[in-house]
Length: 482
Image (cartoon, helix red, strand yellow):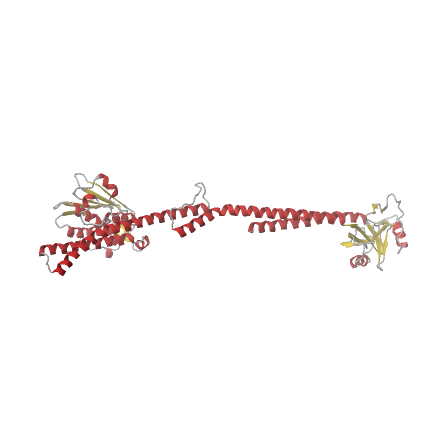
């Protein structure tokens, strides 16, 4: 509709302008012919015509030429207008032109002329004859020639006119042609605009259908076909929608996997807790006390399972936190202080181990608590898999943190899975843990812009390597962890 309206406005403006230009050209041609007819007249003819008023008289020219002042008059109007308003019409005139006040004013203006004037000052107008036919009229002061220069004839004006029927027919035909062409142009423009709009909005319709389908069925597998070579707004919007649904589908899949894995991991400690609690309850109900050693073992098992549950829930909470929540707490952190704090906790968990450390100052951009938790998880793994009396070597140099233990190491076929959620080595499933520690480590290090790897250490054991880029400026001394 907008395209059709715009084209209609443009075509209408051009058509109206064209019609008025053609009208002006045609009227100029008629006015030129009228000026030729209004040249100074011969005094003999004028006197004869005026002397016969109010009756028309035959011109002195022969019938075969049938003209007045040398111009053909068979289809023209020629008459003299007196100051009293009477008209003297030539017998060769096609009819009588109706006189108006504009014609009479020419006689009044001519009375102010002095001397001889060869410049015709007349009035052009559209009028009608006595039969109602449209004519183009020129009324000028009457000039006559009597064997010498033209002379102004007093109190008389010359009225000449030509019919406008052919001119009006031409203008009417032109108006009809312009109207038809304009109509076809507007309809064509509207049809073309509709086709272009439908072609341009077809991807939007597909996108709308896809969004409605997702909202109705929650099916995130739907994709919108996009021309790879196209780079317009619709193509970019379609690619963004496809990327969004892919991300949502992956997020849903990870969420479902997390729920399933979490349920599986929670089932084992809960089952153990339930069994131990039922044994304690049955002992109380039956009055058959459990031997002190067994009771102590049951309570220790309950405590261990509760600790494992608390650790698992804490890991799940850490994984469930959004990126926006982490971004609000990111700041410049001393990696040296964070490693030293994690070392103190690791020494408490493995008092029988020897932990050596060589850490140098380094500052990173990260969330302090999350970064410390990640370093603690790495050290916990080293403590867990180190043999009794073993050694753990920790080194921090130029933003590269290495933690090397002397345990059994990780089989080569298991290395690609160590950072997966809830993945646990078959040889380590008897040990406490949720299988989320290294996953949290990988996520925290990636958010800090770094990377973490696990590899076999020369001579046995495993070496964990964490690389984190340095921050622009160190924090104030007051923020350093003691």
